[in-house]
Length: 182
Image 1 (cartoon, rainbow, N blue to C red):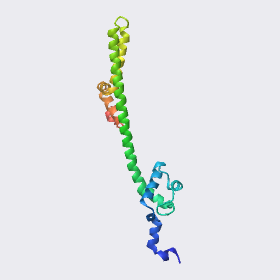
Image 2: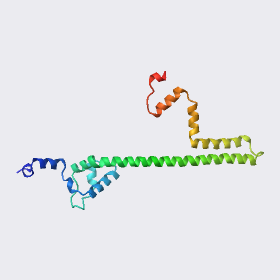
Image 3: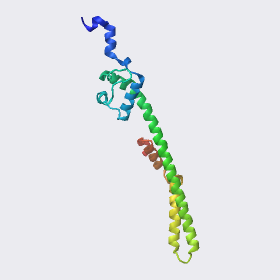
Image 4: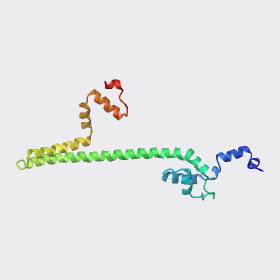
């Protein structure tokens, strides 16, 4: 008697397509997902060696086919959502860190300017004008650079139309059509 005779052809096909998936608890599948995700999303072959048996149901590890199905149909979509959340959080952190850094630089530039002015006032006869001016200008440059926008606007204002088109094309990762370049 063959397997087809005892179960029926439809039951046999179902077992071949999705073998024993209903035997595993959702909690176990979550554990397996966490192991898969935290270990860099390995293939089902490498994952099988990393996972424990399902203690809750007393069932052994899932088959390669079951793991492959879980990975393709459940784990990958869930991982994409998590990866997007991670990316958004990292971007937000980077933006906040840069804003904090530029704020510190702007304050430092302002402090340097004030020190230059104070020193110049207190030591009019002891310091060369060039040294005082250099301290003031450097503080102004740091403050201005840290705030960013004025330098960018100065650069844009001084560009020709062709240079503007080229820069915008670079930012958009787009090739300037030859007709515009002429």
